[in-house]
Image 1 (cartoon, rainbow, N blue to C red):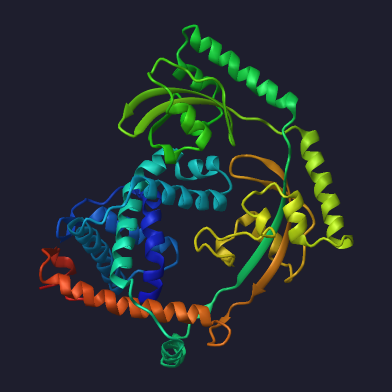
Image 2 (cartoon, rainbow, N blue to C red):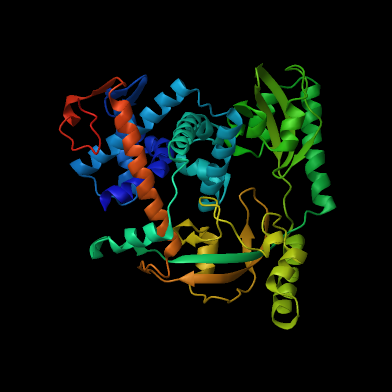
Length: 452
């Protein structure tokens, strides 16, 4: 059972290791060294130890068996990446950037805002991205190789039933509580007066730069992007896909490092931008951000609209979904009846620990079909307003059954079949791949014959 838990956690652990590494840096890093070599790839002691700490942080008991399982998973990952280089399996920068942004957005949604994420991990968003980029690229490469290996594997309902029936009673998993939620979001509008004040403030800063003052100095003094302000507004090298479209379009039009853009508006507010250096498809830049604040009147107007729509839910003939389509500020959910999508799975189902904490506290005591009263909301980019939440469905924690949890049983059965095919692939590559494992781990009972 531990092995199954470890396998399900590993990709999350690999992603978290850079964050946990920050804590390790404060406590004192272990002496580094190579503990395994797989072809042209290596497993470092520091990489291994940081992921042990990550597993501990998720409540997994660490014993020698767990360490051996983790090392085998890491060696498998390295073998996939090593073989990908041989087979010319390539992950593009755009794929890495897209996955990196998707996962960071998930963490931001969990912690509440970019600023809170930066404060918690004591790193700027760009520093987090820089440290995660290679991890994500390796993960995506491994995933592409795994998909190539298992692409032809199918499973029938008969095989799913046989898989479930063969499970010992104590191995039938517990299914966590799961929910589906929909929302109608009411972002407070930004008044023309507030917008103009923000623009004028930024324009006066721009004029000072054009008259000879240092962009970086004024960024430190006035930029409201706290992550980059302390570095003179510098963002580091980024490609087009790393940046929101409006910012990217303005930056990549710049021809030299002397020019300052006109004011650019994005979802975060107003910016002025200066290029520092261009390297191929990536540009290092600095910016100054002035946010467009919501005034109290606009927030009150959003609350009044939310109250009115809440009353319509109980008195009007329009459904919750129709009201979401008509009134919601959330472009991602309004066209699907307000139904929220789990960024980890791409489905509408959330386990309780995957839900935005702001939403969890609302739905915790609700019953399926119930609608919350309007509650304050704040998005990761700082927009304030109100939201109405509908709890679409909720399941209680329970032991899996074939009838009620067929999709999960099917997924587990298919994963087992994939695992068998993958193990056969590993064994076919072991003989032709250079492998060296530190003596400390040669006594591990690995699933595959890594020790020759």
